[in-house]
Length: 360
View 1: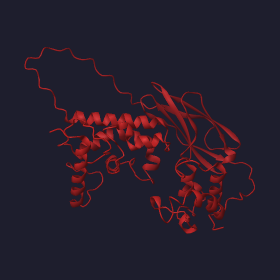
View 2: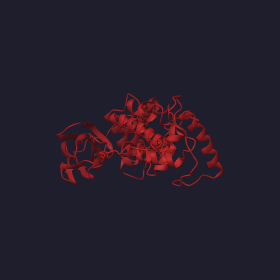
View 3: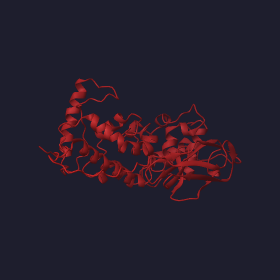
View 4: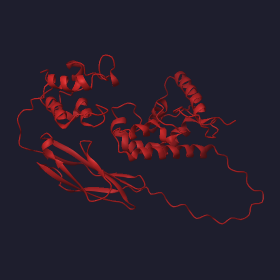
């Protein structure tokens, strides 16, 4: 009997949860052979697939071959580390289970998958990644169909057929990308020209620069790949720079880390680098609604000095080690929608943390 993919997967989730309960939480990485999962049930479209014998192993292994590499390349910095849901972790089985449990993929309508829709709406990833996700979900569905699609009955008296031409080998070669200027471990000041060279066996389609994991400027679609970095808007310290390149086959390459130290003439003390100013002008009007007593998203609150201090690493002189600074400097993360913090507001938080995050 043919049943809809979504309905069968929903029943499979209930079965999977029941089995997992009696198995007392099987360890991550060990695939239970009869456990399945559910996905978004926004569509009742019949995918014409018999799922009665699908196993979790089949779902997870086809996920690993299709959608998982795209999530690893584009989402692991946040959703493979500190940000939930953690669907881009190194363990592909754990990532698959998170995708299923949070209904982040719509197998009936791949373009309406929550992952793709969120990126189209401005989440912290390049817009083309949404189309990559849609394409890989479609490929995932096709691979699931191929697993259970029975071979046609052979012709009792088949005519000899010529051997078909071999399929072309898939392009799995990532682009090569390097920094050509400046050289590593230099001390820089003012506006610095960062020059990048990228090449590929087919075609480079995008180059993006990162400074301490945050993007600088927009990605280049074609060369020359030169970024202007105004170091005067950054604190005097060492920074880690990296460039990535993507080719027309979706392969990614990246440079080695380039360490540069910013050293500009010191300026007067930032008058806004005080907790009272930051709370009244940033945290209270723009953050407490989602991170306060009535709603503490991700278990984080900013409605008091003591609560805010839990997101600050006072034992480190590097603001990047503090969760508060990391989330506000990444546009689109906090606040998640405009108006975003401007450079002076981010600088106030950075300077306050650098001064030891006092209750002033």
